[in-house]
Amino acid sequence: MSDSLALRPTLTTPSDAFAMLRRRALPQHLDGSTGTNRNSGRQQIAADRDWDAIELWLSQYKGRKSASTFLAYEKEVSRFYVWVLLTLQKPLSSVVHEDWLRYTDFLRDPQPATLWVGAAKRPRLGRDGRVSDAYKPFAGPLQPKSIAVAERAIWLMFSWLRDAGYLAGNPLLTLSRRTGPVGKARRTERMLEDDQWLCLLNWLAGAKRDSINERRQYARNRWLIALFYSTGIRSSEALAAKMGDIEKVKDLRTQKNRAFLHVMGKGSKPREIPLTDEVLHELSLYRQSFGLSASIAPREETPLIFSIHVKEKFRPLTRQALYTVFKGMFEAAAESLEDKAAADHLKAASTHWMRHMAASAMLRSGTPVLVVRDVLGHADLSTTSLYSHSQALDMHREVEAHNHLDLHQASKQ
Image 1 (cartoon, helix red, strand yellow):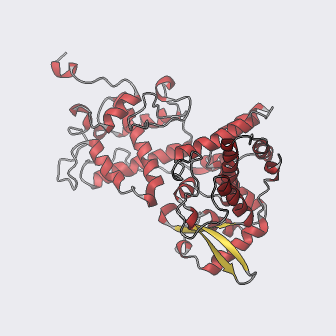
Image 2 (cartoon, one colour):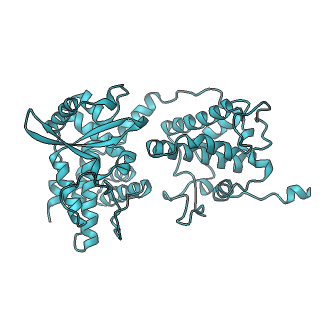
Image 3 (cartoon, rainbow, N blue to C red):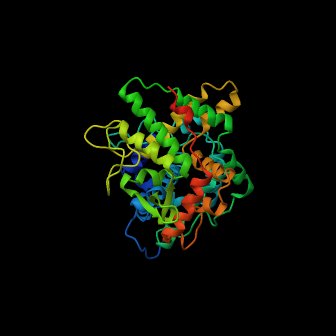
């Protein structure tokens, strides 16, 4: 063995590879500076290593408006890059089409599971910013829709690197459209059955409220369930919102003040989400349990969802923490179900399921489908970001007339 090969660092785990990637410590034979798919012509960017070029591509998605897109794309390209380093032992800029086909097979069953699949969802980085030794990129096999998400992110990355003159071509060749009926069918399964939903509410009703911390957890959990179930709000929208983003508009037809939460939706489109009186009541209880006034001050900067661990000021909950809170509620509630299949289904639920359930509940209660579309921000219309107050008030009336937040079980002591 030559001296140069003997000195090459050994990458044995995803944690090793990801840590070296982030530190820009990859050796030359892996950093992409000599990748076989590098463009020999004039580049439009100065980057000469794969990760530097990828970060330039990702930078266009940074910022509040595209934060969720940035996180999703960064996750997909990072774990693909880690897989390339560990499995193929070559730079990303040497990937060919057959490598991509091999990766999609791997996504359907990440093996060896002991190396790639974590027993629980854990953060990649510790508080010190270093890559966790326990980092494993996957929670299990990916479903077709999730594979399609990964494909789109990676295809966009390769396409941009090709257009920037960094790569000679896009090894994915084309972007397939493999969503179809399977993905749609699975989406409808990502909801709770009526008995599972009732189980969650009964669990909430029986939650301990002896200490200050328990009472705060209880109020926070009620607020989260009320907010997500009644509005279908996206996690990214809720986490970025502040209390001061809630505005009341006078409804001249009924002489009633109607509340709307202003959020920045998908595709950087502003949206107004109706908040009924029942939802506002839950918000008041949430605020009061943390020593805040029941009413919101003008332009108040308090996060719409904040950590219960209050020291000097209210800090917004992180995306990972929100996921963990909902998972904790679902898993705790499932313990009371005797039917194993029903319990497993409830344990599998996540924050995003609340969005599907909100849409289903609105439609079942008779809310017009176009109103549901606008409330959830599903429509890609030029007028979505330009609602007039009259349009918004019509939407609010329909939501309040047909939808009621029944958390009466949770009020029992």
